[in-house]
Length: 440
Image (tube, rainbow, N blue to C red; front, side, top):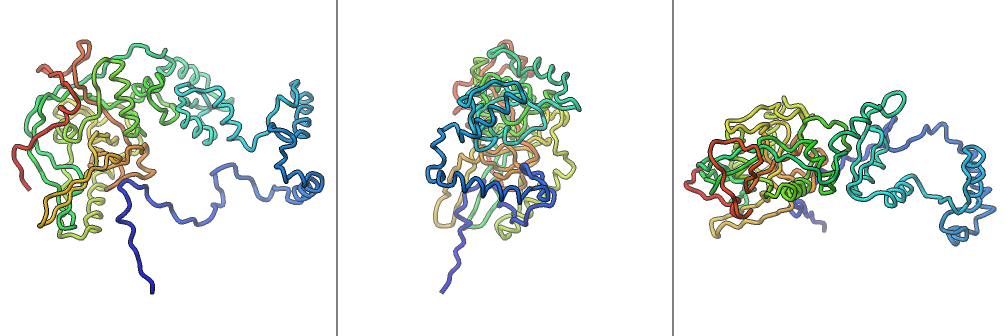
């Protein structure tokens, strides 16, 4: 007797999409260092392997360690002679180390010479393995465009003179903000809502923040984020090629909170990600009300409808980030809400379940955060590129970026607004909002 078991309900939200089924190697594959199979000297390799095995085969019993940890001694002797003859390099056999491949060599050099936050300049078109290693070390990798002679000298000079070359701890300007006074507004709660096991529309509330909201008028830019990277407080997320005034993208929630902590230390104020309620209030008419079919519709049909609605909103959007301000300001004077860069919030993903026999039960998953833009979605907090997966519901965003709110004022800061801001005493206070009425 056989029985089926559906384990998909056990999956946590935010898992990446399953990998495509393997269909074979492409005829012309640019993944890895592939060679022309017709040019492989098979007969010569067979002859060489046979000769070495007859001569050295018994040393395999000890993995060849009789020659020491630096590698096969005859090979090192051959290389010292070749280096002296062909390159004029005088070295001894003990100066050479035989490695198993280029990545091992890169790891040894990187861990010897680099520390987190160091800057490495390299060619823009380079080995992906090198970039992966530098990213894991938290090193700032700056890619320089190439021409026929190698690195472009003008681009190299610009990179050396740019913000990433500024001294650590150099003075920075506080971001421009707008101060929004509290007032009632409509807000549909974030999260997943079910009743008797079927999805239902999230409740729509009229809420009011309990104090002034002070929020950046622009998203954090590439230049802004690079200053944090250079101060060794933020991880490198991608090699820097374009230092123009564009929003920082491929930013995870973890990266954004690291930036907020750094900016708070540097400016002596408290900066943090907005809650979803705060983001919706600041976005005003650009906040998308995600009202989808109620529980009478099958879950699969509801999710498909959600995907279609979100896709229709974004068909005309370019994938590449645009310069800051390209999507204009809303009625609150805040730029680029609901453009092609979605923004992290500090709100956790919550599942709300209720039935006729018991009160509502809510389970929060703070490994997944609410992301806002042209539509609301939910992403795992470590995801930087939504195209790689990690979207827990709906259509993935085009790009992931962020802006921050500030919890106390700075006299030297350019504040936009006619009424004074109120200093906030703690992050917890700013997160509270209450319901004055409710409607479905």
